[in-house]
Image 1 (cartoon, rainbow, N blue to C red):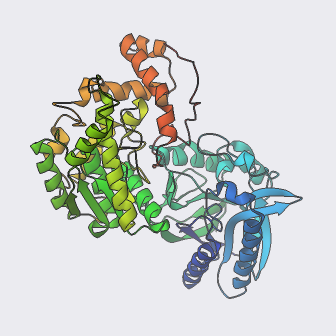
Image 2 (image 1 turned 45 degrees about the vertical axis):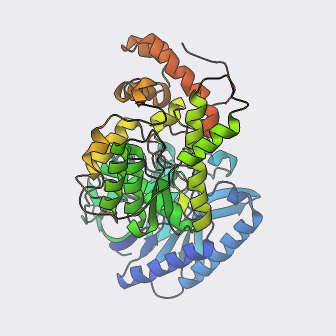
Length: 553
């Protein structure tokens, strides 16, 4: 029985539903692990079919093809090299399971099913899979290895059961989406506790990459049975690390290896936006993106994110000035485009606005201009940008932030048009923080310039939609620091108006914001997808009825 092992942790990206490509990537990774003399290479949860697969797993043909691809992968292990731990879907006794298979010596040697199925927030695995029984360890090279799957380590029962049945180490495969501050929760709040309780080391393997509204940060690691961190892989990039393990008198221990420095705030948030947009655009085969560059902070930040995600040559910015667009905005937008090195065009909308005024003049006769005319301008811009998208194939990036989306300070079929919104889960104060940070730093995964990406004036000037003379956001909304604090309570923490009043907020302001929050639900249902950053993003986490009468005010 060997007293040393080498285990390769393959922190890979994946393409949901592209089984052959995912299998080919795993096969290539195995070849590289063979050169490192690895005994086992492990891949993230459901790596063969992609995660989260949602209702794709209800297609019988996908299940059949996944089984066929798994057999092909198993056959490759007849060649010299490591065993493979591969996540896929499995059918047993007519029930569909999320599981992992150990492939070795040309065969599927063992299969284990996920026991704890998450059914909260972004997860709805209960409607797709059946829970497996409490799993027993698998045996590899004479070593008992427990293979809990993602949610299985967030509850004590599975690891406790595996340890009782003789597991000498845990290799936990995951599809754990990014959330702010989740690194510490994974390591200190969960993994170390399981390892210390069982007195065995735990390897935590996570995927990396964007999938619709979710983004996976990687950041895989290994902790030993005493709770010490032995290996920390990087975040926001694919990586394969071969870890070395030694069996001592007290059990297996992972030798200390690379300890990568993870991105700190707010680089982690910015990186989440960059990677999610990159994978969304590339996997949906868009040649690039187009967006309206208004001279304001939201569109400037989106332009920077797009350049860091795709490169300047794939980003097209368009200024759409009206008669209310200030010279200041024209100058700021032009300078921003120059700093980013993107294509920049100006398409005035004055003539289109005039045409609508003439067209609607009869039916609007006798009524003073109001929000209607403001929204017409926004919708003309939306139509124009969508025309550019349709004509040239570029995906339209939407630029509204979470503060605006929360209270409906956005025009449906206007500035809400688009295919993806990097700022959808970022409050306005986060937008300010990210813009200041990006002007001083470049993310490790960024493709954009090293220096500033927008004029400082864009960050410091008062925000304005510029849809009427001298308009400011503060005319319609509380100051953003106040608004965001209120929204944090109402949205993220689900607090009532009374609770927030007791914390010092004005009752009338709270009641108004709560009312706007609920009224805007129908708009958010029609908004494009955007990357999840916090614990309560609109769409996947927070699911409210459009029509309801409940208020806490």
